[in-house]
Image 1 (spheres, rainbow, N blue to C red):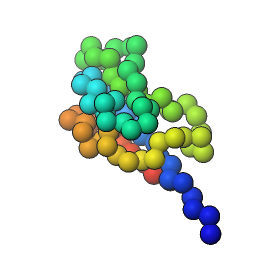
Image 2: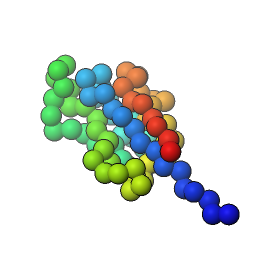
Image 3: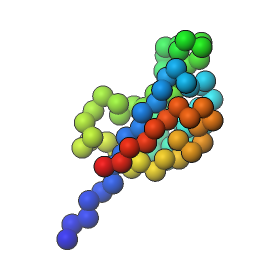
Image 4: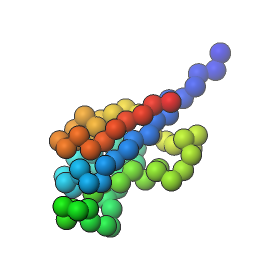
Length: 80
């Protein structure tokens, strides 16, 4: 029986993010970066770098460390 590797993805709400970047510091695969754009509050929000590729190519395992440390509850984690 072949084991299926876990895959996940995260959704970041750029308008809730205040740019503390705790999520970036805890991501074990460095899949969170900082946006060049400002949100409505004037912060550079965190962004998920795998947002524009299919789930089959995602490296994210859905560990949820980013969501756990987010003080603004701006991150939702999904697992496949």
